[in-house]
Image (spheres, one colour):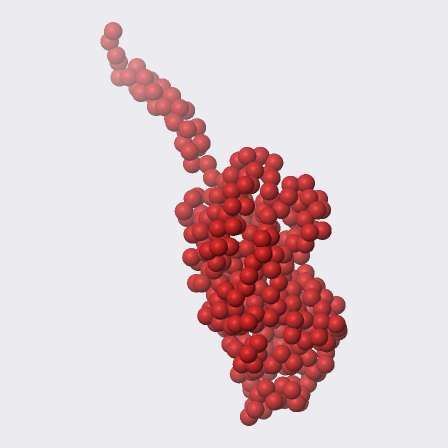
Length: 346
């Protein structure tokens, strides 16, 4: 049989098209990546963004995280609106019994330790020290002027203005606020009775309110004689003025990776990983853990595997990123116990 040029072209074209239809579906199956969606605490926002970037580089899988605040993260977890939630205030037993959280079950997985720091904008003052009584007094409403004798005693030789203190707090339900109020309640009985521990307390000092770390920081920066609180990594990254606070030993401590690690390593995690240490024995005193909330059971095996792979990476390779963003690592014993829970996800 003779082959003309045109017939050869038809054969080549047919072969190429056939090959393309055979190979392309196989390639798509191999290259298909998974996507997970999470939402919650803004406290670890920078860290979780870094986790997501590095995880995608290594696996090709996408993890989206919306920093909407711990309160919203818990609500979305209860509704089943996310694959995992994030919170700096661990879910309570009653919250775990609600909605999809109750149906599927919840594991609290600690991912990092971090610090909350007071930021301030007082003209002419670059270094500020605040004792426990002073910091709690400002946010409980007992101290209303910057030149109050208590603050002046903390800062000998510093010229403090006879100006009204303008406290700035979170407008949203916030794990950052929970960590902050947890510390102040632990060290000051008046604050505990007046304000108490909460993600969104009823403040008694008529503060300015702004959402998320960015909102509080922006309000402090544009408001003279103001003071607020944000996550340490956010403050350092954005060059904010941070006050030194008094530790349990009576010393004034600046937040640093070392002082945060010292405090976090003094904490003992119970079996359920729900820990609230408001007054650590060492290091920088205003610290807390942050958790990812994952379901014990997922609607399908593929989703369960994707979450398990993600959480295993966070607890192993991901921990190597914590210190670079001023977060404390989770200790090896806690990691071992958390991995056992992750392994049982179905």
